[in-house]
Image 1 (cartoon, rainbow, N blue to C red):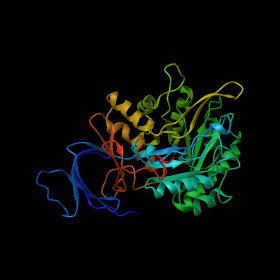
Image 2 (cartoon, rainbow, N blue to C red):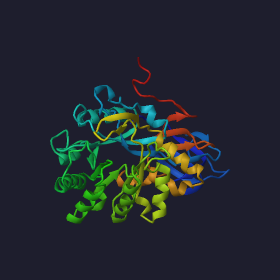
Image 3 (cartoon, rainbow, N blue to C red):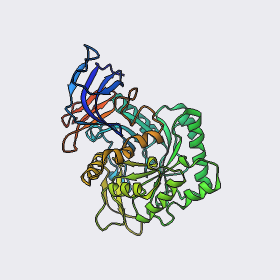
Length: 394
């Protein structure tokens, strides 16, 4: 870890994600060393600390993006449609301090080895980065030849994903095949203390979440292991996902663009509908699908057009919620503490003494102003002060 000087943030309006009011935060060694209510006569805890008066600006935990194609996604219309890797500052400028990378449709020309190398590169550049082993298909693409061995012996691998179901691009897994992968993920998590989840890509197929319901009914595997994503891509699918959340699954909303006449819910609307449903508030997360291909297919499975997922869709979704009059207290957990709980990242997703100093500061217009990762500035006044190794290279 790069050594960072002591930093004292004064008069920070802290949302932890619960609103704590104005606080002074002492940061050092990558952690929040101390936090206390702001006071005009509070002494400096150390003559060696650099002080910054935030004058009441809002300080939040950094976003945890649980689904991003850090090596690039796509490829469904040929090699020229492979999306390039996502550089460091695309995440940090979006307020993302922790990211989980994965493979999608293309787990053939892209591999878990490449994914692990990309995670390690982002870590070397200062971002908190993890990954899932596998991709859309069975047998699961691994580094070691075993899901459990991948989780046990490769530090950054914390689960399996994104395994595709109800999608024409999937391996059309049976219930029993799904259960075997979920069991390996679960046991791998038990052996290592990692998340041990099965992150499931949901397509547009009519089967929806039926296989997950059947898997829960037919096994002793805890519901928390099954983690479906893209649940807002169809409105009926979202209703199915609400029922799964009531059974103990954590569901993941994708912050992709949604047209006004589309049979889908934008992330902000989906989150509000989830919170209004009475399902457990801690069992919903929002991710960006950053770097992923957002394709449109015809009835024959041919790609007609594509867009690319953007890391800043997380911030745009939060900003849309605030513009609707929602409080940070109510909506912020889906971006921070909820994914931290699901992924078993105990020192992340909150602002508290002893927590990692991964912080996001908003300006008066709800824009990302400043970002700290492990107590180190990555964004100041809306500008990246640390960029990836090859950003801007010719």
